[in-house]
Every structure is written in structure tokens, then in C-alpha cells.
Length: 373
Image (cartoon, rainbow, N blue to C red; front, side, top):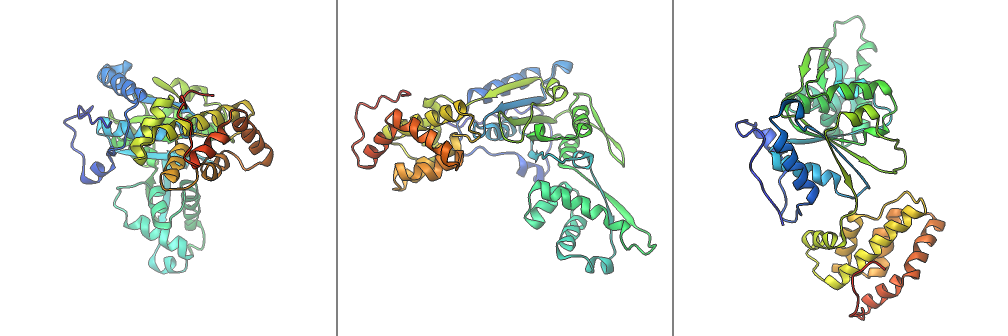
């Protein structure tokens, strides 16, 4: 059931039309979780308590456990524009703050590569409503990491073949700065992959409740409505423990695990419209067992809610439960033959393969209890 609460944190605040469009709208299929209720209540309770204010939140858990969905739900609950930044290993300070880029003459612009022309034209036409990386992501259809690299390449153009001409520069703030200055809810995805300690220090400083960021053009203060939601995976390839100083800036943390079986089934019913309780109970048992087996055998992939959604949806549209198991669940966890064999052995040991075959033939046992095997 969707719960729409309109007791916004700053009810007198006037958002622009562009900002209103960034406030997440809960779809009818949204299921309100205990974590969502708890965080919303805690933030509201402490919002006007000065140093006790809760404005930095950590959601730590497995892939597919609903961290981003929860961050978006908080945007809806608080009436704050939602935006995000996805961190990557080679982030530098310009990715935290923004970049200074040259304004190149039309003649020089025409001599650049097509992608560079498209990128600079999109940046020049921007009216400050989006960050530089966001503009490039939309203009070129590239990832955030690729956009950050492009911004750095563009920044070097002024030093190349300038022929002594005077160059005008323009500062393009990062998505972090935009959210920080304008008072948005910012999801910071996977900061634990960042390698450069200086970048983490800059992020740590920005997350102080009374913090500020030194830009090349000015010093900006943290907007009173700014909320940072840090989302990070546990035991995910390429990650390392979250920086201790960054964790210390957090005032509320949620350990995000797969929800209970009953909640899992309720979410799938709402999301897909598939209402076969008996079948969904069996599928949930498979997901939970595969998740447990993957953990026990140090298999990096995850069997989570996303797999459950797409698997159930495939079955609802007439695809075999056993055949779609591989394409919707197992291969998402791993494609390594030895690891697949471990997962198959676990399913066979608990007779779940046989139950899936029985389900495909319409002979699923009526005494399926729905408990974990």
C-alpha cells in the first residue's frame, strides 16, 4: 500500500517547476517499509533540533535490497527534489566540486571532434539547472563516470592550440554541489569504491551539518534542507569498508537485508500484478535459498528482490518457472560453472527443482507450506 505523507520538512519552501519535477512520485505499486517509516519519523522528530538534526543517512546492504527505492521514497515523503551521484574508483576533487571549462569560439568549436562539439554545445546552452556531468550524460547518452572523464578532457582544451587568444572560462558545479547548495535529497551511491583519500576528505567536510564547500568562484554553505543518503553494498566486488570518518558523519543507519518472505511476496504482487500465492511462495523459497547458498560459498552475486520481480513477471506471462530460473536468477548471481553447480545442488537437495517442475505441469503440491526448506 502506498502511503503519501505531505507534512514536508519545510512546508513554506517554494520549489521551481524544474525542482518539483525532481521530487519523486510514489507509484501505486510502492510498498512502504518499516525502514521508510522509521527514517521518516526520526528525521521529522529531530529536524529543528540543531546539532541533533538527522540529515546524513546510511543505507548499507545487499544489491537489490531496496536502498535506492528507499532514498527516492524519502524524497517523496519530505517533498525534496531527488538526485544522485554514482561514485567510481578514480574520482577526484573536480568530481566532488565541479569543473572550470573554457568557452571556445565557434570557429575552434567546429574543429573539435563531434562528441566534444556536442558536449560543449550542451554545456553552453545550459542555464544552470543541471550539473555538468548530468548535462553530458543526457547529451551523449553516457554513464556518470564517462561524463566525468569527458569533463576533464574538455578542461584541457583551453591549453591546446589556443594560439594566444584570450580564453573565457565558466564554472560548472557538480551534482553534489547543486544538491548541497539548493537543498535537495542527494543519494551518494557507493562512496566506498573511491580510492583517493583527498576526495573522501572533501566529501567528509561537505557532510558536516554546518559544513561548507570551497569552490573556485565562492564558498557555499550547506542548505538547511540538504539531506545526504549514502547507499552502499556489503561484500560487493571492488568495494572496501566505508571510510570511518565518512561513517562518523552519519546520524542514522539502516542495515538493508532481503525483507521477510511475506513482505517479498506482497511487493511482487503489487509490482507485477501476479497473485498466485502458492507459486510466489515457492519462488520466494528459491530466492532465499539461493541467497543463503551464495553467501555461504562466497559467491559474489546476489539473489534479491529485482530477480524476484522479473522472475515472477516472466512466469505470469507464461514462461516456464524452471527455464526462466536461470535467465532471471541464477545467471544474475553467477555464470561460473562450478558456482552454478553449487547453487543447483542446493536446490536439488531441498527438492526445489522438483517443485518447480511440478509447478510447470500444474501439479504443485497443495501442502506447500511456504516455509524455508
